[in-house]
Every structure is written in structure tokens, then in C-alpha cells.
Image 1 (spheres, rainbow over the protein chains, first blue to last red):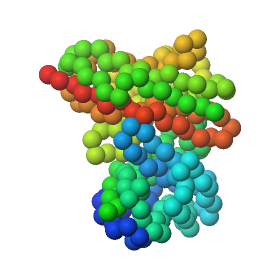
Image 2: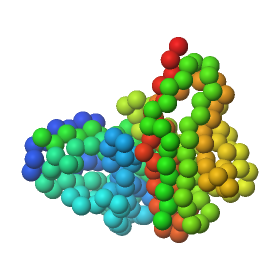
Image 3: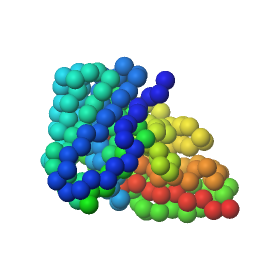
Length: 114
Length: 113
């Protein structure tokens, strides 16, 4: 099993450009999450999904959109990138809500917005 | 609301020495507590978690943590550090009906020969 995979691993954008980050999991998990990691701030939840076709806002959702059209995939979109979105993005999946069960993380996407 | 505070953003130990990473929490409900580890250029993986029951929790790679309600703490320890333990460690709290997981700021552990 590959677990949780993320595409791409690195990306550099110019301000105003758009992009989509792809997360895929092969563990048949219902729950999927997108976090951003910034130095000294731990991980902060952007959006999450409790099942195919559902999405919900997390702690820092502004400037991002998500879609969960297939159970195994969770897409994170940036419509108009800003330098403040320079960060490392992690996707995670789990069998239940994050506050109760183990989360399985992908390797991350390092995004730089110039 | 829940929160965790990790005391010390950087901890440095010698190989073979005791590792102690501190985490204090605040919660209005019985908490679920987690320690995750992030090795360089990798995603996070679970070290151990406390839900209910036994307050001393053993995890992978020789780590353990003790839930102390009276001290609102969940410190992570390992008797003897190994070079491969060098990583960033995150304490996290959950257990509310919202199902949210809140992470601490992280502690970078350096192990020197």
C-alpha cells in the first residue's frame, strides 16, 4: 500500500496564479484533511471531508477551495495565490474524526508564492 | 476550547541521554492526547496516543508518555536517545464532540554524539 500520496512535491507560483494540489489515499478512509504547516505554528486545518461529496471549513479556509469527488482523492485549490500562502501543505486521512483516531499523513507539498 | 503548549521549541541532548519533551494541555472535557513525530522532509506519523484507561502510554521506538490530570501534562520521554530520534515532535489534543485535533507548536529534538 502506498498510504497517502501528494502531488506535486514542490511548486513555485507567482502571485495571482492558480493551482491544485492532489491527495490520494488507498486505505479506504472516509475522512480526509488538508493542513498547512508554518514555522513555530504547528499544523493548522484548512478544510476537511467526512466522506465522498462532502467538505467543511477548518481553522484557516480563506483563499482555498476543496473537492472530494471520489472517496480516495481530496483536492486543494488555490484560485489566486498570495505570498501568505507560502507554506508546506499536508494531506491526512483517517477512519474517524481527527480528534479521536490516528491520522495518516502524506509527505507534503512545499509551495512558494513569489 | 482546547489547547496544548509545548515548552521549548528546541531541545538538544547527547546520544544515550534521557529525552524529555514537555506538553501541557487545557481542555474542558476529558482529552484525547497524541504525540506525532516528523522526520526531516517527511509527513507526520503517530508515536503514541492516550484516550482513556492506563495513564502511562507506550509508543513506537521506545517512547512513552504519562497522562497527569492533576498537572494537565502529557510529557514525552525516552530513556536513551539515539541519533535517529532527531526530528520535530508535535503534541496534539482532541476528544471534543467536534472531533477537531489541535496541534502544539512543535519541538525540534537534536541528538549529538
